Image (cartoon, rainbow over all chains, first blue to last red; front, side, top):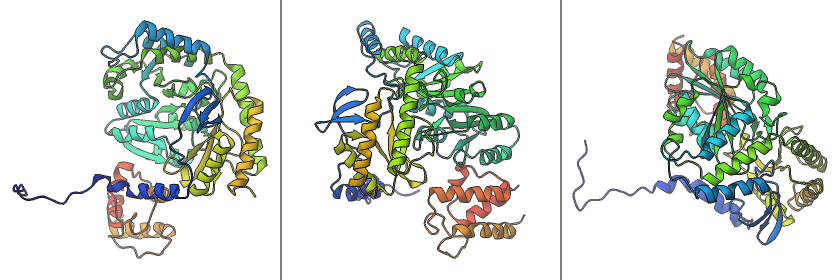
Length: 412
Length: 79
């Protein structure tokens, strides 16, 4: 044991922030080229699900997760206002203490109806839903087998728990099976997959993967954050679309995308599911969602159940944009449109940021995505379509991309 | 499989990943000396796992910084 320091002695001070120096330097280099900070955009006014004012300019929004355009739905807004009047601005408490209002039960019922499942548990964000469920159900001695391109919330859920974490190559069924096969007999197994992978907008071969997982006795969790409301005949996601939703033990989802507000959830038919409410720490040790949020979510979810026409229109837009950008000469993340996300691959971060800025000057907002969020160290301009984008807007977007692509030197 | 034999097999598996032809000793570090990024680590770990029919979980990988530690881990994991 070392001696304590005397009154006139001090040790060398280590700045805990020095570990961020490489990132600080990278940002400084990027911004010194004169480009607008792609991670500092402010929307001054939001006009509709597809248009906002950015830097005083009317801008088409093509980088939100507002897939079904529910944020300005008149019924959704009315429900929120009513709940503010009736229940106040917040619950100031945990779901297991004073934070469960009628609205929280109502939104869980809406989720059970939407997915045709027995149990639904609502978290304060989608991030917390993955964090909570994964870290709680997979414990010491259990194995989590997951796709290497999983969302940060899945990785953080793994890190928070005590299970052995075994990743496999993205969407590689054989690599997944090899790992399942090697897990010691008798160990608990959880396979974690996503319906839509949000960076490239590609979907998983869930039917085949889940069949393999079940063969090895694993339980299956599928994150359908980017497919809810849009993919599948009833908008239940990729597993529904591929006819394997019955074999999914846990569906994780969010209210911050198609539902158009904020919050996360897990739905399940597991007979013991309700115990989660007492053992899942990210559910217990945080305040529940405000009454207005769960009221808007309930209304939105119920409307999404019958939104077949909107789904069809969004698919049409996705196909048109994918074809338009391909024909213009851009390299895209998928050969065919597989979701509402179309990822345009940029040669590097610098030119990606230039292109992003050129688009903003055209009046178009997209997401600039860069490592470590992206697979294979790619820089991407991620376009996410909304069911409220008109056919004219989609044509406008293709024109903007073509002009900006020439300005930024991406297109010849 | 003893340590020497295991080491010889890992040495063969590491070759395609050792782009700069760094001399491999027990002290060779994957990140600092071989400059493996996270993608290379994933591919390399998959090669080792398939080569020895074992699982090296992320939890175990976190404890492995150099070549010698990897050989020891693989010897142990083969039982």
